[in-house]
Image (cartoon, rainbow, N blue to C red; front, side, top):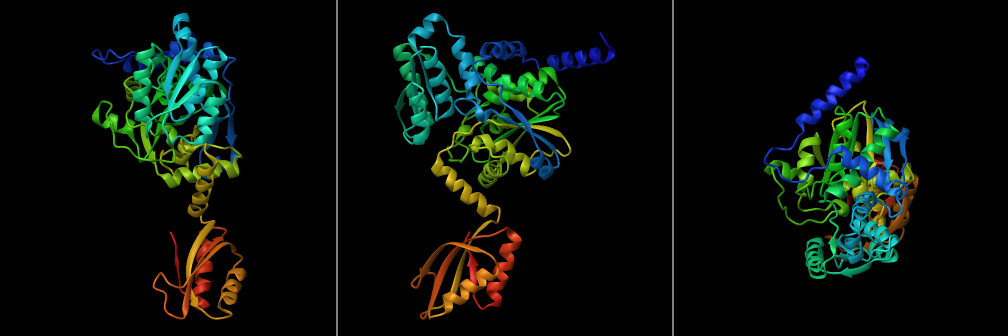
Length: 430
């Protein structure tokens, strides 16, 4: 063996020894061999998704950015990998009885598609308020969908009860060694497509994706930094690390519903503890901006969870500069109504949409003078609302809320100064 290869082999062996489970930890651990077996098992049934370098994002962040586009899978997310690997490991008896799962969307679609394709009955429990687009897609792939409960926890509990009652095999969305191994195939692909990656940024929900991916990557390249990203509203894996065991955190709503998990997995937590270098959090507006940027600049549609990793890189949460970074865009199933709201909020945060509450005299010509100032500043009016009775309006005056398209923060500042110079007091509506 060449000297360089020997050194590399020793480094891998040393890392593998360091990352062995605690002697008292009896939870089944996923290893590289299981992930490699999963890759062979699902090959041909799950797409080898592209990993593309983004020139614009690289310039914007000061890093070399490679986007791993697993949102291009058949059902729109990476969840196919774990679901299919688990399905392909079922015994003939288990397959004949059927499978069941609980999911708010992506895991549901993956199970529905791959189970039905193999003639296996699938029952999917989803919360009552799951977006219609996800329910429709899951049914279209062939599973029987049951809407139950006001949240994922309710749907999960009922699916577990039904699994025991009808002797069905329960397919956990993330906390299952076969599912984790399937998700880990993403790590193998990313290194094969770009062997010189120095870091990988990955979203975290329950930990199935990052647990499998980090295990695969660190087993081959221990020097690659693995950074996990959670929404600041539901940092369940970070809480688990702080408490040294999975804990249940309070409910919260987030635009990143695909990683809205209140408790880290019992199988995933040890993997994250051993293989993940750090976990950062992102805010809702930061995720919205990442979705908008991917759509506008990269022509790529991502859901909130799918854009969380990029949000962390864009807002300098990772602490990485001048590195070759793989960024996962791992889901693209987003409700169009939510997407429209996200786009609007992203435009507001980016300074390309602004609403001003402007006071003006209520007599002929005032509105004409106001619109002239706006026109002179090259802002485009998209919505107006007059009010004469609220907001502390003086008799004989009126208030008008005007929403305008602008070019950015500097343009907004110039417009607001012009309005003041023209005698139109105003406030920015946030």
